[in-house]
Length: 396
Image 1 (cartoon, rainbow, N blue to C red):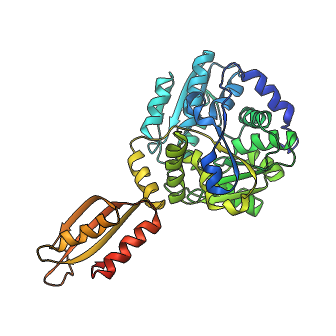
Image 2 (cartoon, rainbow, N blue to C red):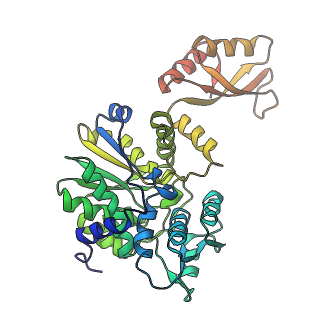
């Protein structure tokens, strides 16, 4: 594909074709995120889309035009659900190949939509290669297909239709199909709006490719943002990204966990790791966007609920809402009471406390406690630790 093959007319045609099959998702203003960042922040809530992600847009646009009635796709989850759902609505048989590492909740969701699901390989690449080899089915690529990209681009048409004078749209990047489609739509309708991609630091193919101006491949590391853990950005998508995207940003796991928690707390929105990277990027780079009108693409809400407790705990720790530390106390009556009394005096809430007088490397007459406490902020925790230190407790 050359850079001028996909244009706004393709995306407008896709929008008309799929309008009765998808939701027009809301663009939600966030007072709390705006105050936190000094920006005017809006959320494009694709986590509220059918099947829980933007992927259904591209799936319908692609499947509407195929002649064969048997399709196959490879996916970590969201594309699987989208193809399964769209195929079911259109009377097409769908087979989905997922690696064994894909979240069980997404695997079961694809089955619930009526697709045949098989697991193959450890990585997405292994599942992808196997699906691509099945010649008796039409292969539906998750991101590197012109029809799929055009379908995802309809998100951009909706954003520009709902809001004027947008300074920047932040978009999650995995294989690149979403940002490619959105960048064509937004740059065509609002040329002054910047398009900024966001990737997890655990899967940087899009970021590396953008910076080096050539497609780069890398093996993703485990990440909360499993939906964008793609080892190689799509070539078709990359050509568009090179032409239209203004910048790329990386975010780490702690930032993503904190963003998931903030979406839950402040907006009552369930946003998966891949969708939360845009808020993570804004919070990490708020100075760069101060005073700007920003749209965050919350690309999906299909979070693995077996991991929610760990994600929330990590987000609370990162956000300075939970403190975890060890302290060495005198092993005498009243010492633990004095220790907890100091925490109480600062209105810290002890969530757990493990008392271990047999820990290694402890001097005789000493005992160790491992403490997890709920606090209001990092400053609150620092005040508690400082007071414990002043009162003679060895805090580590």
